[in-house]
Image (cartoon, rainbow, N blue to C red; front, side, top):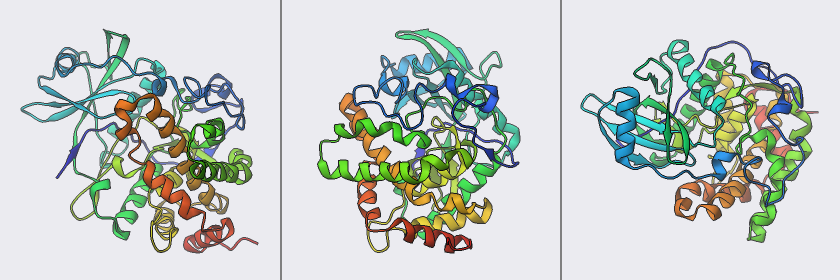
Length: 396
């Protein structure tokens, strides 16, 4: 089995609540005005899509650390003696730390990340330790002083460092695609979201490039797509988001969500059971339905019926975490918008970081193909199929 390094989060079960929008109180009592520099439907130009709209940690690459430096940080910060091996990452520096007693993941956080966001991730991990010990997520390793994370002055600035336990498993992207796998993933996501209902933190709604509720902000990046066909597909998806999703946002149930349940962030056993959840660095306060739509965006069929895998996943999710009719009706446009975001953000990132382009664009081909296939389905057809699969009354 292949093994993978991780970030992690979990929490406990209650009921989601309504998304408070545009300047109203957010989780932790902080106003949304302190997080957002624009209103929902204002889009940056290609040149502006950097530190504010895509997040400073996506726009900034720190001076790389050596494996020897990482081993030293593990020893000094956490009392862990081992050999470090670099792991691929979009914005932080991650290392596998191999020891005689087991393996760990050392996360050296991008210096551009707001310290309150790093604390958000750490506090979520702490919450997971008691909320649901059976949820297959890594655990936060305390520092030598018992703190949840360490701080070091390194070249390039002050860096927050976290250590996590390591989870074994086969990356789902390398497992055979099947209805069983899709149902397993959807049910695990539903369980995850139920577990996470009442987790709160002042930084839960921090600025994040991959925040689907702000997909319209990326419209100014469309000219950056050099291929006119790709640009047309992405623009159509953003048009659909503006038409159906944007106005519905204030009425949707919201909570902290995983926000990146893609096939590279799920570990499975040989019999397609989910045994690990990875990479919680994109967690965000958002509509609950966004989490399902994001997961579904990585399962659009490339042959036969393009919507069938998404319908399977919606039904499996609904069995544990029931969706409302208005949430079901938004799935089509949310899935399309997420695929458009994948095209736009990965294109922008790869042009600025060609040395890491292969990693950055790993999900891009599937997103492009998925958007093309989604163009074969009407919104009304998709809404009808989702409602039937969930046992909801047909739309009038």
